[in-house]
Amino acid sequence: VPEGHTVHGHARRLAALFGDRRLAVSSPQGRFGTGARLLDGRILRTTTAHGKHLFLGFDDERWLHVHLGLFGTWRFGDGPPPDPRGAVRVALASADAWAHLRGPTACDVLATDEVTAVRNRLGADPLRADADARGAGERLRRSRSSVAVLLMRQDLVAGVGNVYRAESLFRARIDPHLPGRALPESSWNALWSDLVTLMRDGLRRGRIVTTRPQHRTRRSGIARGEDAYYVYRRAGLACRICGTAVRAEPLGGRTLYHCPGCQVSSG
DNA sequence: GCTAAATGTTGAT
DNA sequence: TCAACCTTTAGCT
Image (cartoon, rainbow, N blue to C red; front, side, top):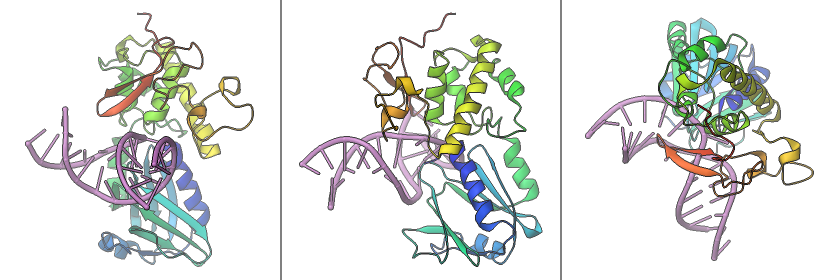
């Protein structure tokens, strides 16, 4: 269930399993038949992630482009592939590894210039070394939209989803309703830097954990549910810092979580 | 075992 | 602004 860190993890895993290997590419479900025929038998050369988009570069300048959306999942493994579970859109297989993709929003074969076009529409990715954090901040601080809306815009900040939005704004004590243009540059710098920290940690762990140990309910380990978060999915519960009830409100078709006690605009 | 909601995006209205 | 895409999981029973 993917924000950017998940997709970067998939890129790494696919590189380890399949890098420089000749792959059998098939479409058990049938919907990707044309694309599978284009890629079948080619060698995987490059795997890269930008935000929530995954790009697998094959011989002959052909790329498999995948966006998981809300429902998409990868399953990977060593050894012989298991029977496909559910509707497998793409199956990859080398001599000693397999991967199954189900339920993606986007799954197409692109030429190199089309990959560039997709990537040109994406903003700064906190998990990429080439991210233009300053440029993203300048654009964000020119907007009248709220910081909450802006953080979800993939053409500004690529890879941040609803969890990282809620949690990073809480950790910075920023009111999500604050217009981008009212966010001081220093606050943007701190927010960006925290996103880098959080998302790198998420990539390493394979899950999102934003709470500091002293703010967790349990002494050891991090429970599967809300213990890992300050505000995400904690509507009505007491804020871990100030005790105010965490608020959930619909915003652009998504649920925004925040603490009205801690996240107060000063301007 | 069932239901509802979900970490996302696109395209139609 | 909303439906569609389509799978997993949490929270019930």
